[in-house]
Image (tube, rainbow, N blue to C red; front, side, top):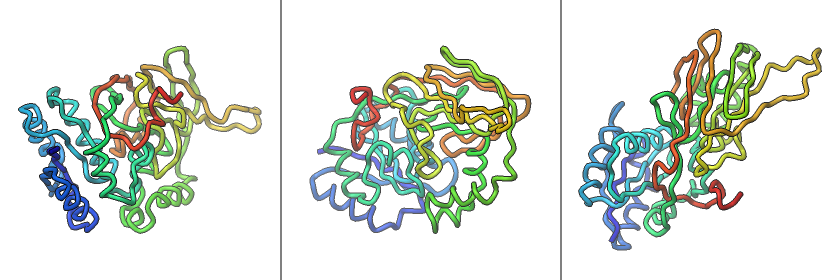
Length: 293
């Protein structure tokens, strides 16, 4: 018998797919206890309760049930706690984009399959990123992409899914201006006007856009993408700049909008680092693991 604690976003608590998945796994002989969020901060509070029980050997799996924001909050809180025993982690993908879940091969259309995978398949050690003191699971975006994420209407996301991000970007592209930034990483340095940046532990964000298509989640490295301002008159050939490093430093002349796994912020400078092998997570495939490169 495997003992699961499902931390479920309140917006999807009545989703019949979730109820069917929980019933099915219970019928298989496993124990599933469910905790539902109600307001901001609940996912972190419920995760701390779960890791305390896990550290006593009372829980085997902690499952984040929701979108990318819920996954981030559960995984980051658990990592910060520092002690969750031999417990591993899983995802029940119930958000709009489910970027991280999709990239690691979870069946976002089948909740029962996802929950059974967490019970039956072995966990793999994955990295987390660290932006200053703030851990992240998937991708940090900045500039154009971050503002699109922050300013996409929730109602539009609900009705159109990941397409909502694209429509927002196209409709408001004229409002998003470039800014000057200085980037440093291992073996890489660039300064100039840029439109967008991404730092990926995972590969995709913004509803399936592969910002860091070569990123791996267990290589101890972060993938950096910079999109410079395109100057046709200057004949610039490089539309994107890329680097792979265990650390990235950034400094700008003015505050830049960023999104940390969907959470908006404003920064002028930061240092990002990789925390290797931070969590054991049940994945749908091994395409983002070093053994496949």
